[in-house]
Image (cartoon, rainbow, N blue to C red):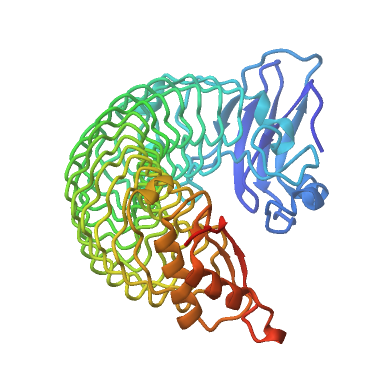
Length: 522
């Protein structure tokens, strides 16, 4: 149940002993000496919030004070005995009945009434309770200032979600963080912060999503991250950061989404990534990055989206990809890359859209695709300027779905091994320049899906007829859909198409083939 506009509820930890005095700022005070009730609600999730509101409101502990009139009040807390005030916890209640978890409307609206922390004082915050969730969702909290550096916060080890969702927090002073190990989600979505102090993070190990969504941070200090191992999403969505310091990330293992959408970064330092295994979406959408350092990539296995949509990258270093088994979408939509180094792809099985959307790519190296047993799904799609393509090893590849879709400048194509290919949907879709030379008669004997295979393309009559003849002689699958684009066929090709499209009942294969029809006189 939400409090009215002349009330304020001091939220406390459940099942916790307290012994303190609260001065409400209106000339009245209360003594709280006892143990708070046990939280009775079920575990919260995005689909169960609304069904738990009554149980949470009834059981979540707190002291409610009613004022004579709505106004701005300063609430002061004094311990009766050392450790008599374990801490605050504004979290976990949705007061509007929505099934969607939303920091802006949870906590029975009391979190919204907190506007400033003016003094930490000598309160002995409980090391067991830490400061987890203390001010989570205090969307009108604007200042955390004054005596944080000399307070008793040194007993704490966790700031997990302490200021989570404080979207109006515009300044943050140095506080004692000398023993904090867990900084996960601490300033998550503090979107009004423009600068951050040089706090002591020397013992911090967990920086998971610590500053995620701090979209107005323009600079960041050289904090001590020597002990940090988890940096997942730490600066994700810090869209105003123009530069980043050379932090010590030597113990880091997880960089998932770490600088995702840091769109203002134009360069990046040579950080230590020697122990990093997870590079999922690390610099995704860093659209202003123009070059990138030769980082240690030797322990990366499946770096999906790592540099996807880094649209200003014009070149890329020869990183160590010798242990990668998947490069799905790794450089997808890097639209300014005109060339690419011959990286080690000997273990890569999955090239799902790896260089799709690299619209400025003019040439491509002869990479090792022997292990590509999974797919070449959309691998080079939208490579508009790519004119030639190397004869890569595709012997084990079954899926060629849209692999060269919209490679409109390709004037020729090599005789690659497609003998195990089953899916050719949209493989050369709109490769309109392929009519400039003879297209090879590829082995498509196992093809089961040829939908839009050459849609928008007009192969030479000789090339297309040879392909139809080969399909007739080698592919024994029934009811296959195949698109030959605008290509026309000669008399031998006509005989092959007739057989392929004849119904199974009448002795044919029952295929559906779209193309440009018979070329008279051939």
